[in-house]
Image (tube, rainbow, N blue to C red; front, side):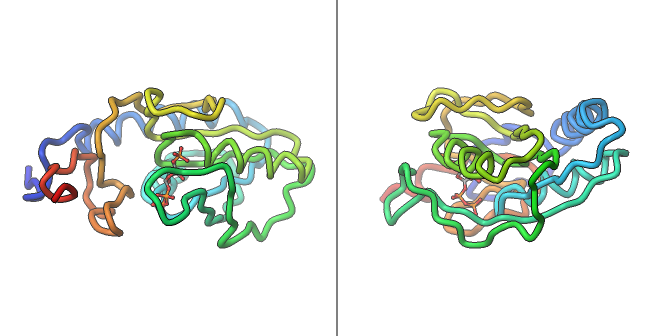
Length: 181
Ligand code: PRP
């Protein structure tokens, strides 16, 4: 496999991700059988996971996009959520599935879920590809998780460092030398 020179090691191969995404898609099909959920892609990191997940689901769905930020100028997330792009769907009475790439402090999803609940959906579930429970600050547990991972700086398969590496087909650990000077 071709590995980017700034990647220390591959944590999850494209094959491991593909297998797990198919399992999650089957679980989502079971969960939403006979219903038509609004599947929400939280931009930008979740875009690869989102497209692979919905491509493998047989359930009839609607899709929508949201862009939020709980980060200020620093590198740690805070309690305030800024909506950069809102949903175009009215989710009142709808089943909503939020698709995320990673849960770290939990602040983003905690605040996002709280905000969407106020719009009175019939249900809200969260599926995340990656979960870093060691970093948790907010009481946020996703209903469905692809992989629970160690606290490493991961990039690829949607995840970035300074907007780079999102299109790598695997999840890798970034070399420290790239972000430590
Ligand atoms: C990432 C990720 C989650 C959030 C998780 O998004 O996609 O939304 O951070 O962190 P938390 O659990 O500590 O809140 P980011 O703001 O980096 O935007 P991006 O998806 O566009 O890269």
